[in-house]
Length: 182
Image (tube, rainbow, N blue to C red):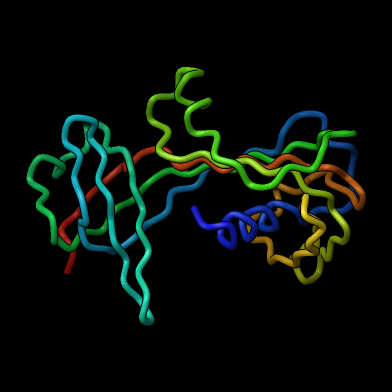
């Protein structure tokens, strides 16, 4: 996952000012949909890599395809498909935690028993400002960059306040459907 996308997600998480201190992590799991072409298929581990073209560039996304998902066995490189997949984001206040830049924690997640994780990244940032009306948040990264991001799901920010050190974990897991593209 690219840093800009991860940091966008970080701030998507950081909106709620007010309320009680969050004791438990804020977790939001969503299903996303992508229309793309099949770039690569790793049948032995049931992973398909998709290429989404747009505005002069392309982006790759790999997803694990559960054996219950129909259509995987018939996929060919170059096929146009619509894929629904599951992602989750966890935001947790970590008082006194050291700032950490975005790091790949996929191997740790798999070692902990979640074999369906395709990609997991974590970062620890400091919340600087929260704009509940504009649904945006400003945070500071390990390298002292100040970043402003829009927030799309305010549940992730419940109990988050200015000055908090927050660990954000983004996990991409599995495809829940694959349909032929149009």
